[in-house]
Image (cartoon, rainbow, N blue to C red; front, top):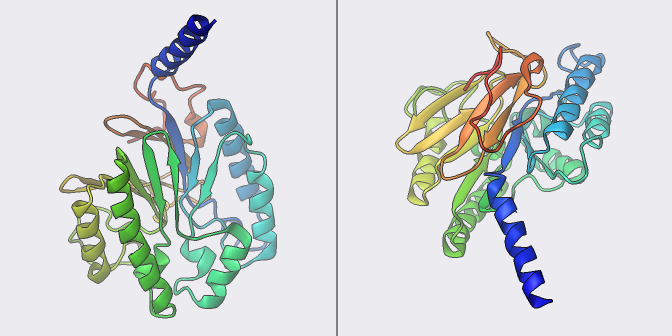
Length: 288
């Protein structure tokens, strides 16, 4: 009997290994209400529902929504519609929300942070999935701490402690998730609306380099951008909601393993399935 149990466990482990590395979905900026300038959320409902249906088919390990869940900070109707559609996600797939500037304000305050936490839970936290530890940050407290300096300082202190804990725990891969990217093209680019100001950017990038963080995922730009700073890759994902520039609405699939592979899929080019033994599929409208 013990021998049968042993071989059953061994077979299960082999099957899990044969299935290949897990993958997750990274989406950003569903931003309920932006299409119609807060008059309704009809187009965002359609886009997000289509994305959730696709995710349920693909069955990723988890989903991270990199901020701007709604367009108008604290709007009860927009929050309700976002939550309603996200409840359609398969209950076996964990989803992790990230606070965006439209969720807590361009300059977050104690009031907007309290309201966000009441509706969505913590705005910075960690989660584990296999060999990966995800660290979710409130980038609005990094970019614009003026109205909540104590909250900003507490988050930074917490982050350092979490990076130290990940190292002592022997975590193989630490991934950072936030809304505003540190940079879009290069680490020393000028400050602008779509990046973290240099005064904070340099401090956080140095921290990530010190603790061996290789990947940061963000949204906010409503377009895709991938850039490098030494061995750290800054991956910015286009919007589920309103696209900008030459981008189209869509989401990113990220395959985990010794190296991280990612590809952005427009809503008209989402793959039917992900084969763990093959590279992520290409399709019309997909891009790195």
